[in-house]
Image 1 (cartoon, rainbow, N blue to C red):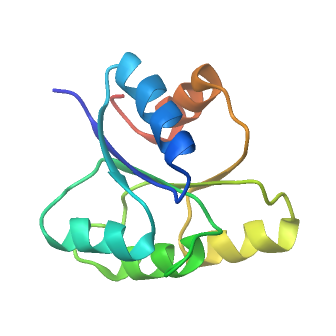
Image 2: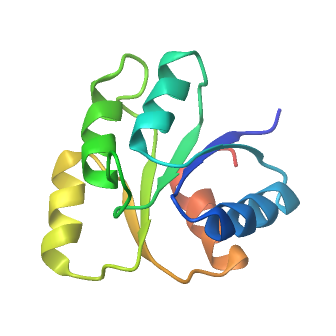
Length: 124
């Protein structure tokens, strides 16, 4: 059974490239353009095995999204990876406090991304 990954990013190009890499690696991919859309998907019954989110997005950024997602039933232990151009340690620490599992700095290659996913997602 293939694992589902929710990709949240306001860049359509980024979403397309991540989706392509992940689908090639055998994952099912759901996408959202910002935290608001992503939360709506989660509340409507999308159950990802892992979430990859950008940090800087309009409407609801990654930090708020992570905090809100962690509050939803069933998502307390879902791995959440922050994928962002930010590399500041303070931001990383804040994301970790809010519940992010890992932090990747863009651009990240498909193979590297899949490696990280396999580390944080048992059975992937």
